[in-house]
Length: 211
Image: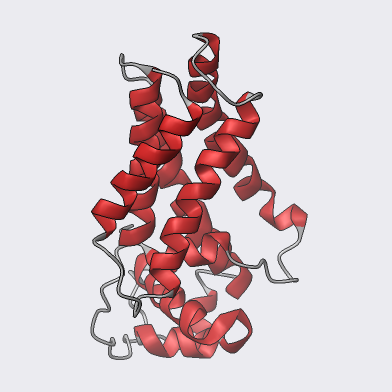
């Protein structure tokens, strides 16, 4: 499934008996509606109408809108985990790999703003810890993968900050803050996103890592 959120034309109602009701189309429509109207404002009927399905047909794919949201978030986390894992295994300096992980993270967020906002937004009350357990485990694996490369920097004696977790979380928080602002305040006269990302990575890595 591609999470790039160019809005496709609204589908006409699919005929009864159509056996290929694309889950990706449902997820893409749900992303837009969740962000535009909030989780509470989004309904199964609205999502179904957007993709040209009856509510009954949509329920053949998802039990409720919480399941839809969890799958959107799971795909986003899986994408980030695959990216981090591939970069972590590169035979290069750990600082180069950490920088590449952070750049890939910000690039994903800016290319997939709806999925990103849903992933890091407030969790609806009906999504209990039991239902979110798989996503939480994926998120922990993602963080552990990133942390392991920061730990390599520390093992070389190049980390200025006292703890590996402190450095890893500072780096993550800085990147999240930048992309979150770019996403939620698009009307501000920002400098080019690439320039801001590069400048921030230069600054925070220089502050946390010795040459």
